[in-house]
Image 1 (cartoon, rainbow, N blue to C red):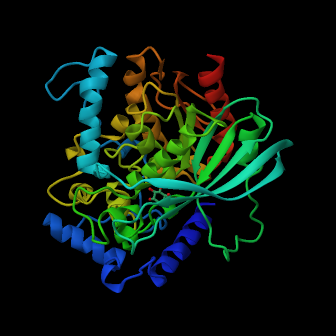
Image 2 (image 1 turned 120 degrees about the vertical axis):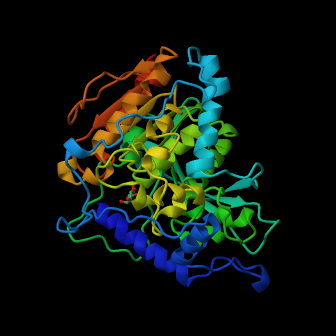
Length: 452
Ligand code: GCU
């Protein structure tokens, strides 16, 4: 599945380079740079000569092959404090968390990792482009395709139209909870490898069986998943086709912004209970799900799967992918330029004033389901143990509210959901996919949202 996703992403990236996005007037067309050129431009802007190389995840013979030895995976065992404010006060009440510590952490994530979104962003008008009825998992459903048209009057040469498909139970007797998924979109001519079958039941089938709605948001229609696209999409639109400053937002925040616009639409719809909307994603989109929760407190739950580096796995761990991997020209666009400083001497992992536990904690006290696959089944790269450690270290944020807690154990092992209340971790028995965790997540959401 992972190879499939990567192949598809490579094709999308090439397609994006060939078709110059929506340029009407030549003079206003976005600046065109390859990812390598834009990455180099950002290093120059930051006064950085070169970045340290990442780990090789493919070739066990390579000198820089990823480390998978638990004994040497923790070169920096001490994490930056979560529950101590910059002024040195311990966070003892929800009010101190909400008024002081949480804003401090949000600001650190913006300045050091994900970048600042502009204070004002253009509005989105959601237009129904098609609608039909269909049975989904035996449930009569309405399937609606939306085009989210982003107001581009300030820079008409850049067009941003967000694709989202909403599947609703047709016979609901009131507003229903909804799950918003960040979905990978394969190009129309993409041929999956022989024998590959889509996971069954699908997420939509599982969600509809519960009587809930499922929104599938295509993040790459908000912001391309490559550095060459940073002068278009929502980031390019607000920058009027110019390349980013060092603290401008990256794709993860842009994708999260897109999810927030879906929630805006839900707030105006009678069919959806906007107070019970969750965000879900795998891998890069598992990172985006955590970022969405951090920056938009209206989201009422999340399912973040196999999120890895720049998601829930600890930057201070040396296991699987490392900070330098996501800082490379293939992935740096997920974050702000400023993040690259930590991949260049003299700064290193241990200089980050925050770590992944701080990101996880920004979901508190709302229900958060943190998932991974099994290292032996192909999910080693994301460092499942590091993800568990970050989730455990984030537990005090839920404990503060009496909303949940994580057990003080080393690692639970596969198919064991751990955590009390609104924070849980579960490693499913397969590889890099959310499929085998979906049912557990939906049980969790149902328990937290409805049975409580
Ligand atoms: C790469 C990357 C990960 C990312 C993954 C994905 O493997 O290093 O950080 O999560 O791609 O999104 O598939």
